[in-house]
Amino acid sequence: MHDNADLLRASIASASNDHRLGANEAPPAIMSIFIGSQLTQIMEDLEKRVKSGKMTPDEKTALKLDIGKIPDILLDNTDRNRTSPFAFTGNKFEFRAVGSSANCAGPMTVLNAIMADQLCLFKKDVDALTQKDIEKDEAIFQVLVDYIKKSKRILFEGNGYSDEWKDEAKKRGLSNFNTTPAALDAYLQKSSIALFERHSIMTHREQEARYDIYLENYTKKIQIESRVMADLALNHIIPTAIKYQKILVDNVSGLKNILENKEYHKAASVQLEIILEISEHMGAIKTKVDEMIEARKKANAIDGHKKQAEEYCNKVKAFFEDIRYHADKLELVIDDENWPLPKYRELLFTK
Image (cartoon, rainbow, N blue to C red; front, side, top):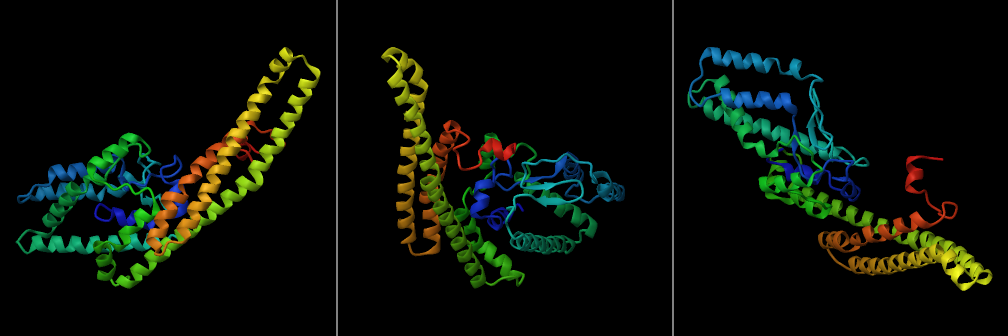
């Protein structure tokens, strides 16, 4: 995982997972491994006890006995970090960052490929030491310790949601691809292409074909989301806001007809405030939806899957949060009986 973190991130990239990763429900987009306190201790012990020189029989025996105990010691006996994308949970590793609607074949292909490649590299490294007249068990220990030292930057036991981890990950040189178009580039890295060709999994052209398909799929999903958002805003939310605003206007007009000027301003102040607030949010939604539609038209005219996906990601999807913000504000002030969609509290606590 240390050598192929970007490829693993690419294997889980999708339009829906971009909304999910790091959103207090799923692991962050930064690839790291949580191994728990006990496995960490075992690795640290290996690093301390294995020396570059020749080991005594007693030292080797002690290490082998400790390694032989690992399954019994760790079985269902470790803390669990729900914010880690790749975690050891007692007797297995879990790749938790895969999208809920994803086909697991893609991530499994990458996991199996990098595991097979690492085993081949491990044997090659061990053989290189045995050819120098180092005993096989000592060679294995030395290679393991070398791997432990080199892979430390990918290990993280803390809160993956925190801003501190983002800063720390950046210092460690770990990638943080927040969008699918950026993450998918890992499929076309020379190292990734060589990996799949080396093990006769996919050719260069098959990699490029999948890359284009992933980008096109991303673009179409964001396009559909954009269209649905515009439809909801223009045909459901704004008309509902206008209807509720009319109820308030009628109420204000009635108060004006029956009350003196001083009493009227006091009695209608809340209604007038809500009327203005509704107008403000409706205007913002209409403006943002129109701008989003224009951005979508420009994106549709672009040739090339990569550039078009980036345009949808950076220009079209950029309007989603703004439109949602104003729709959420209207949801808070419009009467439940008039609101046509389930409100957040109704999703959590059904009537």
